[in-house]
Image (cartoon, rainbow, N blue to C red; front, side, top):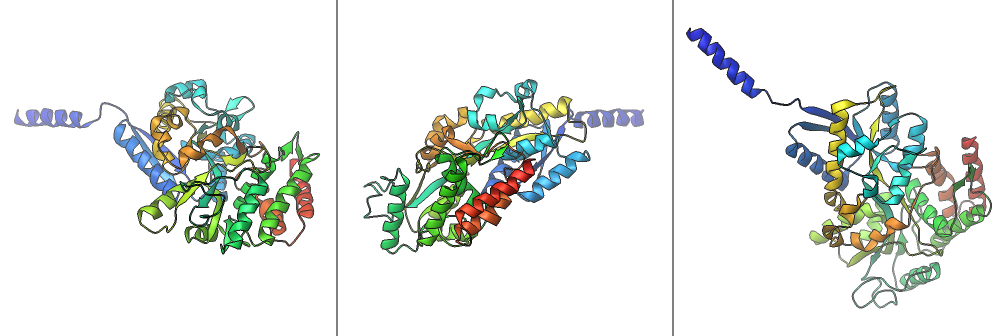
Length: 424
């Protein structure tokens, strides 16, 4: 009898130890390092703590070509994650390769989201052939950083230390000339020796001219070629006049700014937390700010992309049922808590966050947030986007022209020829 009682008691204890639910485990891949990585890991932990019925198991992989190569391979053999981060500029190629599972209306309902909750530009970039393939997390663009101390005494800083008087390219180049004449080593710094920095500045200038990089299957058709040449010529002139660095890698281009040797920097919003951290540690010896890039070439436009959440296919299948609903619940939760992601400098794509009071108090983010209306995403094409043939062309052709090793005309013509061949 004692044995039976003990057995019954043990069974009762065992039953109470079993959860009343089946925990859904989500396999998650992202490419976030540095400050982005810290913030995303914090969001994942907060979600897991708040949702005992769902557990995100996150893995961070190397950004760029390594990440997208691994995703392509994993999806083809049915070993992809349940959810992953993705650049919207890569969506057309991914769809052509059948890597992404469409996000349905039911998916959005499970996430507690609506299409109208998001800004128009990233939603358009996430949509292919009328279907939504990703949920945008942010809009990240290049902005114009400035060193208010180096510009003190110029017509370009007001009494509050804010940038002023720079609306056109003529204004900006006058400011660069003023800085050079007043002993500034590098009036404007950006990544001149790598594809991403070259492409972002080039595409911004081209877009501000009203230029189109790809239209109706043609690379730089009609007068877009001349507009592209003009953009490259401007970038080359900056280097020729000693205003921009020669073949600077990313780290060097940032160091020129943080060390107080550059009056301006053209770089992504993702560096905002870097400068905030340096200020907090008393390691940034100047007053700084960041604004949306002015319409130098006549039109307001700035290169932009978005980090987004996507569900990969598993061979010829995709996740469904409770697992898929859990994935969407996680996506929805992170979108609604994206003010923490905004702290990384990004502009949340989820309008209720970006239009909320907390974001409006976040600087300099709130200052450059209007660029959501003028964000110039890469053309929708299988040859554009992060780690694409277009990036290769920027490194192999546009960069040499910027550095004076070939003419802008030759660089643009060769780029047209190479990329056009890949579209046929």
